[in-house]
Length: 222
Image 1 (cartoon, rainbow, N blue to C red):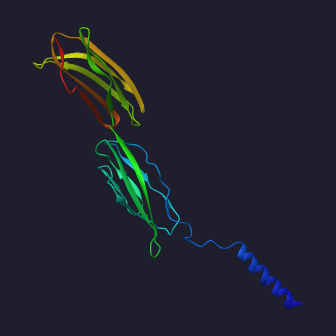
Image 2 (cartoon, rainbow, N blue to C red):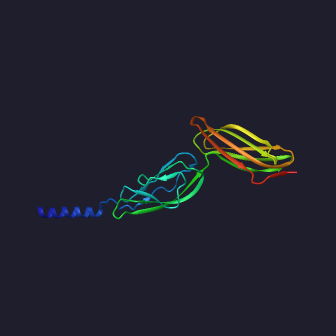
Image 3 (cartoon, rainbow, N blue to C red):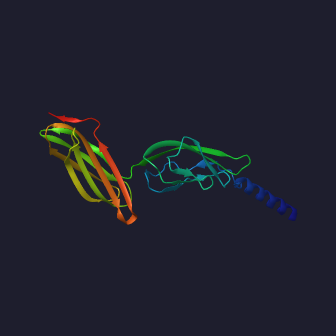
């Protein structure tokens, strides 16, 4: 009777092991989880950690194809992208991760990243000759987390270098905000290049941001 009980017990244990097999380390395929990157702001510190799952940690990271924005680097052990972007950019690159298995498993993923100007300035309405002068509109934007003490001035400079003011604004531009600024003034006869300048100051951090626009061709009032 005891022999029969032992046989039944061993049979039950074997059946249970078959029904609930143990998951061994490394059986989950290695994959890069990160699929999007936060927007970068030129001349502003940036840090983001890439993540992976599966395989056998620890991991090793590298750039497989393409280039990072100038000013950024990838830590091969931590998988951290960090640095200070040097200029606006819109780039695509491929990252590669390897695990610690023998031989190592690998996985790759294409990522896109955009670095925007720290102070954005663009034409909403290009300067044009209307009636007796030059008129148009710009938009300023603050993509940062700091409010800007912003000064905006726009002038039309004639063929002999004399400048005529078309607009001036001084205000606080809140973080993640934009504002449209119309401009225009009557002008004497002449040929004009329009120059727009914006300066954003963060006094507490001793930071100055600048942006400029200029018309590519003279506007001629005859």
